[in-house]
Image (cartoon, rainbow, N blue to C red; front, side, top):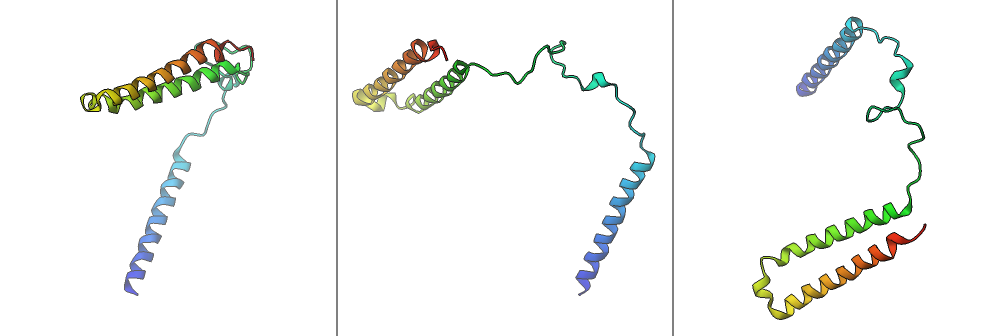
Length: 119
């Protein structure tokens, strides 16, 4: 029971100190001044925008971003093969070359077909 009493005293003291700090801050702090309306205008790169920033992007930008992610991850999957090239033998190297061939055909498809479509 004695421990609960000490915890209650600690809680009351912490609350009084916290509320006191907040009250002192509210009393001593400067009141906010009236902000000019120009402060809330969108501003980027030193220019005031002349159209809505929420315009739609063409789909080919999304295709390009998706292709970048795919090829970035695929190249990262090749990194574990570097230390064990000698241990792979001919069959392992052939598998890696087949993987690169499929990756190359995917690159050609994206470059020649997917990015040239008028969507």
